[in-house]
Image 1 (cartoon, rainbow, N blue to C red):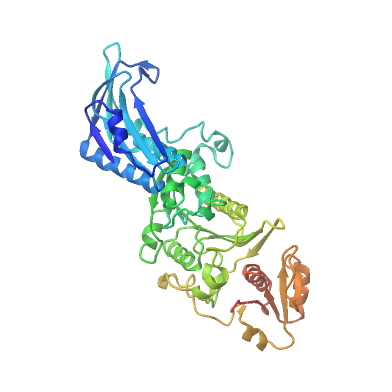
Image 2: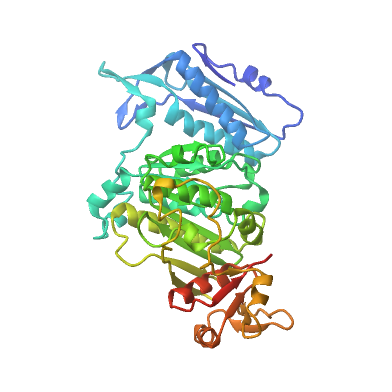
Length: 487
């Protein structure tokens, strides 16, 4: 509940309104009138609110806080009229089953009131002077703090001009999970002016080991709201817009339009293709990443540069890809998503600064178990009906199979005959399945020897590295190297 009142507070009555038998904690905050502000003495204050707007925004803040911290109940009352030194101007009470959620919800209300509530105050000074101050404007720091970004501005590749570019930029982050959390945090820290977050999920306890924007007190809260609150606290100068919804074919292009760069941090191929195709259609650069266990891949897609996502996965339906490589619920090494998310932020910042370079586009594979990194050339397919025919681009499933597909099912592999070799790519410390020919995934020399001797079918535990290496060898002219599908 949020209220405005011209009368002094009755603390006992306000506490009684929050009485509930299931609450183990009551947190109360009182914002009092002090005798100075910004180095000038103050004798009294006058508060004036735009009642209808203030009530609506105050109620929205309270509701948001209760959703962010499930189980918390909030009462916030703000004074209007003339207040003397020492009087309470804002009273906030929060009851919750546990103290952590109560403290967090109370702090959220305090910070959001300063930032959003449309209230003016007139400061009276001993010399008779008085001035009106917009509280929300006063709460916001300068949009380009030289001190905040001093170490970044000191980079010759950034400088004051580059920092101004970042402050004017708009970045969309689709998915605020293991990838989106570190990516958004570093973008906000870098001073990207406007961040848009899209995610329909809620914080779960199993998220916390890798999704660094969230706390245990926020379990059950909408991810985008919790992330937005944390990012605003990290850099109040950044404008955060949170959309608690799914990214779908109906809203894809509307979300992408108007942004300078898009980051895809989703955990399924269906959404990845939607994000990719919307960006390709609108000409917005996309930084995409995915993680399996200890491994991750990173791509930067720009229209007209390198192969698109459909070029990478020809002949594979969304259902097939998600069956083999859906990250949702799969085992994952927390630092792996952290590293890939930070790499996404780095690529986005380079794009915004015009520092992405002229190197051919590549898929980067990162393995935190063995500390390896591998760059695979990403060539465009001339027959790709998506990136080769942008006028007919549709946000739909991947394209139909073609004769150049590097993927084979078991029947297709058997049809290659006895000359074909099937190799299981192992990670350090991993044993191959019984009867399989094992080759370390990073022993490229041995794999090239096998590829030169005849058809070669690659397989691995999750299908990510085998697919990437099949594409790598095909760019080198070895068109008889295949990746075995899981079906």
